[in-house]
Structure formats: C-alpha cells, structure tokens
Length: 354
Image 1: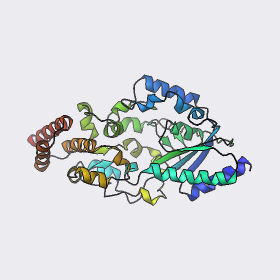
Image 2: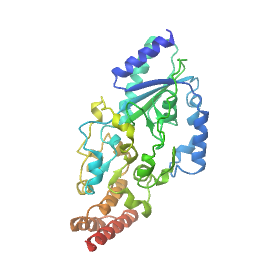
Image 3: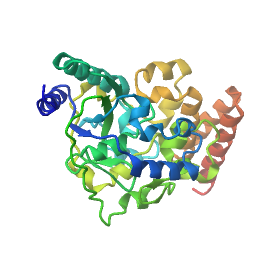
Image 4: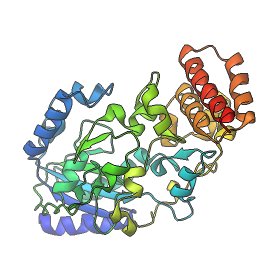
C-alpha cells in the first residue's frame, strides 16, 4: 500500500478514536538536542534525574527503537466545559487548584490504548510493520517531534501551542519503520507576547523557551519530594497539584477546544474543592479518590505538604489554625512538621494584622 494512502487512513482513524490532530515527521532532532543538552548542563531539571539518565536517546528515536525512520505525532484535547473556572479557583484562596490536565482519568492509558488500536489497524494494512507507542512514558522529545510534525509550535512557556486549539492537550507518538511523507513544521506565532513569562508566580520562565524547573510550581508540587523552599511557598498560593497560569493567560487559549474524551471529566469535584476538605482525607481516601488520575502519581505525604502550603496562604481563619495545630500533634514527619509550623505562623501573622 502506498504510504500516502495509508497516511490518510491514519488521519481518519485518529479522528474516529478521539484525537484532535495528527502529524508525520522525520527523526532529525539535532536542533532540539542542543537545547536539551544546554538545559541539562544548566541543571534546570532539578531532581528529575531521569532527564539525564538516557543521555541523547531522547533526540535519537532510532536508538530507542532500532529501525525507526518516521514518527507519527498525535494530539488530544483534555479541557471539559463543565470544569469550574480556573481563574475563580485561583482567586478564592480557600479553594484548592489542581492543574486541569489532572482532573480526569489518567491520560497515559487512555491515549496509549488508542495508539495501539491505530497500530493494529496499520498492521492489518501492510506487512513487516514495526512500531512503539509512547505517551509521556519514555525518553521522547514529544514537543519537539510534535512541532516538526506541524501540530503546533513550542511557545515561550515551553509548552506546545496550536493556533486553532491553544495548549490544553496531551501528546503521544508512534515510532515506525514506515517511510511516510512528512508534514511541514509549524511557524512560531508567539511574536512579542510575553504574558506567560510575566505571569509565572515563581519566575520559573527565566527567558523565552527556557524553564528552570527547580522554580516551577508544577515541578515543586509534583516531582519534588523534599521540603519546598520557603521563598516559593507564598507564590505557590493555593496550587496543590501543578500550575496552569502560563496557559490561562496565553492569548491562543481563547481558541481551546473541548475534549471528545468523556474519561477526562473531573472526579470528586477536584476542580473546585476546598483546601480544608481535601486536607481531611485519610491516606486511604486519598488513594481511592485519586485512583486512575494523574494525581495518584504523588504520595500522600506530598499531597499533605502541598495542601499545608495552600492553607498557610488561605484567608485568615482561626479554624484553619486549629486544624493545622491538630494535625501537628498527629504527624511524625519532620518535613511536614516544618511546613505546618510555617503555615501556622503565616496564619497567625495574618490574624494579628487583621
């Protein structure tokens, strides 16, 4: 079968399976490899040692899957129209903000299963088909690949942006030995806009397209396992899992499209829950209520740590202080105790200046 005909079939199958975009590209990622090496040399990856573990394998698809000659890149929207408004949650300091990508069912399995279905269909069409499917699950430069495949451009906030759909979407890839005709790389439409750089609460975007993850709220609340540096705690505000600020202000997100995937709908009202209600969850409740969501990748310890910071930054309230003090009597963890002391002190300072 001619690759052009197969390519059109893949585009059709991807739409039927709920994907919102698909593109085809080669495996030449030299330009992006230089950016990756510089980023790692500057230690911007913090404690994400997996970023350096595989060396340059991220920028050499043929090393990850021998025989790879082309990559098919897929895009899938995740925003749901019934989700509580992000700006309103961030404005109400008593509510907990969870990054919108994490509210529904874990995207890894949802997308990967669909990629395997597409691969199965390809296998039915041609002989000697070889592939590997990835969804944020291996050393893959997914944004660089998607940009080359024409699915968008890497914005100043280091996220992929599509001029028709904004940036609220997931990416997945199929590495393949099929020599498809490639698509054109997308033009960068950020222009002179610096909204994402200006809004970043912790100034983690230190230059256009350069993110110091050690300062990023998403990194601090999800990847980082230790004591969150004091200088970032007030800026974290009520963000307990991730941060969407640089997306919220991006002008291109005016064109964001709703997801077709029902599984991405929010669970347990995590789009607008109060900090106090979530703080009362036991470890078992945490595991049950976040099961099969991206939130489940963090530990209960991190969950409590992040909420404690949120409570410290919440509106002054004697009830909050009481709850924090009661928790302090029950826990036996030096890092949590240190965060509790900080939050109690901050609340008391607020109360005394009322």
